[in-house]
Length: 294
Image 1 (cartoon, rainbow, N blue to C red):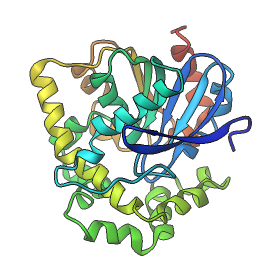
Image 2: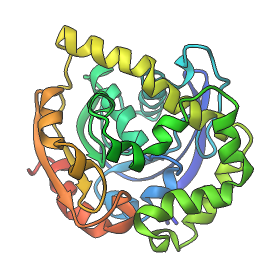
Image 3: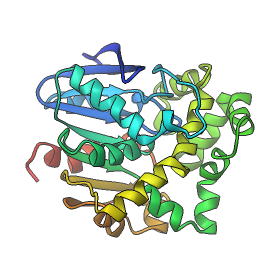
């Protein structure tokens, strides 16, 4: 995986962030989702590195990055805090301004980064999410059944954590396999995801990530809308046509509500794990935009 990349870590914003870096040119940050790590981008990073200096990072709480303790207001895992980690990482690596691809939880961090740090982001691609506030406020029975973990993990500790810790292998296989089967992760990625789920503190961090989204993050999203604070960087969004986002929400309409420079998006023929299911198609759709040619 990640041929030609080097692995390192930096302490930024009070936490150690694990990452791989490779390529040359302007900075491009890759942020993964749950229950995964930066390994999510293994199929697209080499091609992206032909055009960019690619930084594939583990979010705080995930992979081999640091896992701060929980706090009553969930600030340690708010998307503002998680986003600041990554802005400071890129700055330390010499990229005060950079582009970004974010999937799932990483896309939610990216959304917050675009609001909190508009001068840092050049261009952005978000994968298989709609805005968090829109998804919570439009919850239906169908959504709750599909995204059951959103409502399970926000319950008080320790029961949600115990669900993950009891059998990380079964949890990863069940959670990831229900959407796309396990074939997209058959190149050693699944084993890597399971290894990281077993690291002490990961289950706590995952639940805190979701608790933050349902409490402090929603508060900030509402404040942003009320104050007219919108994302201003050019961005695109893609989602899987076999997934939940396009079936239960209107991603285009929702992204237009929270941004001033939405460049469009569409469903791709896959499930939730776009970069692993259809990597070539993702590159074909996103690379021209990231290079400023679309």
